[in-house]
Amino acid sequence: VCTGTDMKLLRPSSPESHYETLRHLYQGCQVVQGNLELTYLPADADTAFLKDIKEVQGYVLIAENQVSGLELQSLRIIRGTQLFQDRFALAVVGNAGPAGAPGLRQLGMRHLTEILKGGVLIERNPELCFQETILWSDIFHRHNEFRAEIQVETTRTRSCECPGGSPGRGLRVPAPLAPPAHPSPCAGPDCQALCAEGHCWGEGKQDCQT
Image (cartoon, rainbow, N blue to C red; front, side, top):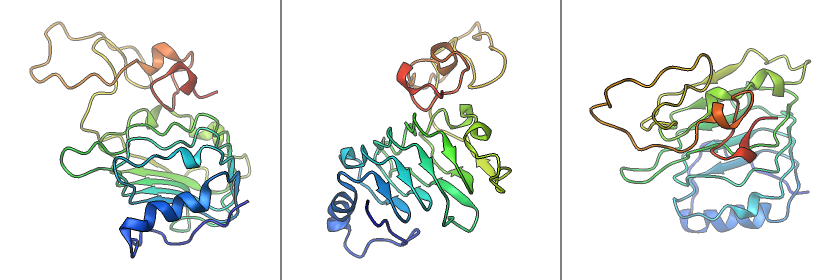
């Protein structure tokens, strides 16, 4: 068990020691008693210190990071005893590096199956893929009064599927006959082809929402 933080979007007073502070807090921790706030992590940050976290009692805030992925694959439940902006149990905001830095590319929370209280806010993550394929309604507890609070923005600067793939949800769209004038880099596998229901947290078969 570890305590968590309540800093919101406040910039760390010492950016140099910020990573070490987070690592010290969460290394080997399975249950975060307060909020899990992951902010201002540089592009080269090793986030393996998060891999044991299974439960967060407050909210999860992922904001202003340049790192491309976070090792939150063990996270199963967000209780929402505290909420970000009084509404959100999960907030993923502004994870874009400066020009040339990747920013967050996938959520990777493949074991997240329950949000007891609070909604979801995902915005200003230009490299993030697949967030619109997640069935958030399946994750919200049936008594979660914030079930309708789903603000998931999908404006992005890269393509999430290879040519001939399909959008995250809905009907398959045939690939255009002519190649696009400015082909964007192919982000990897097509979520809908990999996952039976077409809902995924990331680019691998193990990232399907179950």
